[in-house]
Image (cartoon, rainbow, N blue to C red):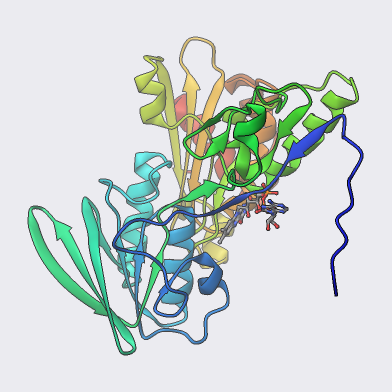
Length: 339
Ligand SMILES: Cc1cc2nc3c(=O)[nH]c(=O)nc-3n(C[C@H](O)[C@H](O)[C@H](O)COP(=O)(O)OP(=O)(O)OC[C@H]3O[C@@H](n4cnc5c(N)ncnc54)[C@H](O)[C@@H]3O)c2cc1C
């Protein structure tokens, strides 16, 4: 059938929402069969006996945890000093310990430089601590990040600014060219479905002249669906310190919570960070069962610019995991009840 090319009427407003794709690094190019990206990893031909995951961001760690749960012998290699690079250091360390306890082997400050494919397996060359070693696994997942789909759209022609693989937008998702907007992954991090959805709403409201509230990216929660789960919002302790903020930090472990014990999920941690001067909640970080459900409580609190006092006056239901969220706040002010 011959396709008919129709000339569309010029649009007054154009929204670019082309998403992102897996980043490809030289030497470790995916091939769909032995070296997967997330596309193949989501529909695997089988559960590999052994698996190397390159990269320990949310996607890499989710697949590492998933395939380990299914019985694969999993190794994770991360070039940075810790796994889950965007998370708070304490949460990173807690999660790492937990994954290692489950049998996942983790190499940080390490780099995969070469993949040799042979038969039904892959031999990876790993550089670590000035030494080179090899590891042979049935399958490899390359999870070294994503890049925005900015090519072949004619963006250069009309002058839409891009930066390191994504479209540059302002707080209302306007690009450098009037009438052209970008939302979602192609508009930059955090590359999350809920961020993409909300940007869509903000952008349309802006087009309609409804004067929307611009999105504050610091208040976008991040969730990693591994076991144990990880959830966070706002500043990490190290980011707050880098900003030279004076802070108070509170923590509460899952083993101090009745519901967590009853669920058989007593391993986890809730951590909160407050501005010492104003009492403003700056960030919350959690690892453990159901934390991806809990985080929204802190997100609402942060959006309402809640202080420690308001949180301490809030009554949390018993017995629930949510009680840990209040206990962590109390801990930041030396008033923890159940530890
Ligand atoms: C393995 C994995 C797990 C994830 N899990 C989570 C999660 O648990 N929670 C979460 O919040 N986020 C998650 N994400 C991220 C989430 O999927 C993205 O942030 C979200 O899909 C971004 O939405 P989008 O509309 O910007 O892009 P997409 O959902 O990628 O949609 C873009 C669409 O545009 C199409 N397209 C591209 N170029 C063109 C073109 N030139 N013309 C027409 N169409 C085009 C693409 O084919 C695609 O269908 C995950 C991502 C991955 C890879």
